[in-house]
Amino acid sequence: MIHVVGLGLGNTKTLAMDALEAIKTASLIVGSQRQLYCVKHLLSQTQQQLNYPRPFASLKTMLLAYITENPQHEICLLASGDPLFYGISDFLLRYFSVDQLTFYSNISSIQTAFSRIKKPWQEAKIISLHGRPLSNLIPCLANHRLIALLTDQYSHPRAIATILCQQKCNNASVFICEALGTKEEKTSLFTAKVLAKSAQTFHPLHITIIEQEDSACGLPSFAGFDDALFITDSKEAGKGMISKREVRLVSLSLLQPKAKDIAWDIGAGCGTIAVEWAYWNQQGIIYAIEYHPKRLHCLRQNKQKFAVNNLHIIANKAPAALQSLPRPNAIFIGGSAGKLAIILDDCWEKLADNGRIVINCVTENCKTELQNWLKMQDIPHNALDWTEIAVSKGTQLADQLLMRPRLPVRLLRISKD
Image (cartoon, rainbow, N blue to C red; front, side):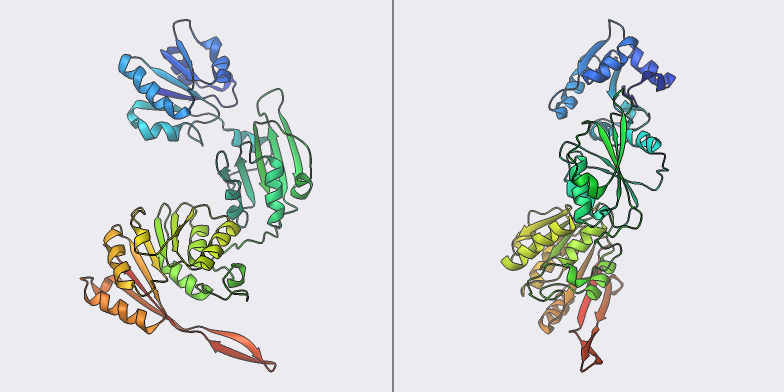
């Protein structure tokens, strides 16, 4: 059995009796130097002590070797805070069965930080930036009043405040909770605009909490981005090779994105579908396939602008670009360069069970090619969902309202049982 004991803030007085027993009776204790020092008064001379290996991934090999040589011995792994909260548990559960593992929870640093600033945290959005891009914070700013961040050396407080100011959250409150549970513990409060210009340094071990009241964050807080927000291949805002807002909303509704989905956007253009898809489904992974140089440039800029790090750009043509991609749960086809039937053959074969394909057709050639492809397939009618969108947008002509029609768009969703 592998016992995983959360040490909370490093005070063994907070440990439950069963956690103390797991530490005292294990034959092997593994932890950092600081963690082993914390529990040394509980250990006997017969208990073997080891530091976590570097690289950390070699822990698996180390544990399996020990278990093979000592099959009847108990192992205790020490963890900071709560091991089931952004801790060692994810790693262990990838390689060991749940029957081999026992977890002993404790107070997390996030929980402690909120107690220090005296704020309820049940509605807080919690993000780990440890080893992850700082820009992961950006999509969370529009819809979360309270955000707690686990950080590393790259996501230091001033860098976080700079991101907030770039997104017009200048007056957001930023709490820095340093060295929690130690003699060096300290809590500071800044506004983002003050912190961004501050030269103050902070303890390497800290939690950052952001609180927004009436934020002027410039990011969308609801589905249906304004077309003008996107960078496009046109000099006129909101124009160019993009799926316009009304079509985009219906397309995403038909796709019904789910957490953990693998998704393809074929013929992504400047990326309006792929970017909004990734923005609202942060637990999904979206692959945007586009080959046109100018549109690719816009696509990359839009990915960066909206900080959708779960969007992966494939600079190639379909169907060749699809061969190395993981099996998708959802596919959007917005452009096919006259190869719709070939692309659909490939997509239908690779689509996962219970997956869905949404095809966007504007030209008559595309509509005809789609109908011809369907005639060759054995797809039941109840698996097809047809929608045609005809939108008119209001403009002014001689001080009078004029509704100008756009080209109608035909959408088909095909569901795969």
